[in-house]
Length: 227
Figure 1: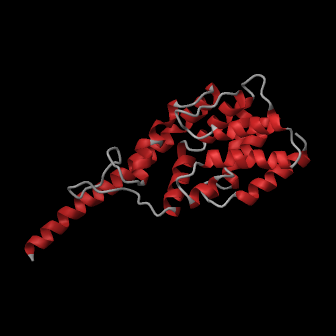
Figure 2: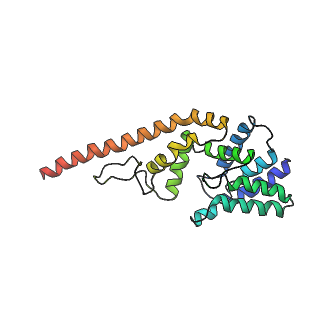
């Protein structure tokens, strides 16, 4: 890929980004993860991979405005239209489109090419470890979702049985289980190195929240009984 082509794709990506949890720095990290993973894979088309990484989240704005839309589906079509409009071969544009379309975890829409699997893994790596925790907290703040929910007895839920969205619910339903969902050995190894940081953060935050409710509610109950 020429620098001119890279700059063209990068500038288009930058014009589409409008979400601090899925910003241009996330895109660059995904690209750098992908290049590291690709070193361990044979027959990688770097022109396809780099384009797919740069453009993989360009549909986020549409999904944010309309949650019924899938940013991967929207972004893949936007990428195809952009590439063909700028003179790229339709077959190349279609390969980039297919990578983007399958980068979101969905059982019925799995990546099929080496480039698509690398993009999938690189994107998921940015949801692991401390970075994944930080990005999730940012996103929860953007959409005004709480850190945790309360159980019927008024105590803090650990998120495992929650239906309502919260950070603890997201951790239990997604972040905790993402480590066994990689296609490449390199990505799985990198993710495993990060796992404990996420576990420790969640455990500490849950203990702090739960203990404050337990101690505080007991103290309040005692004071109210004396009034």
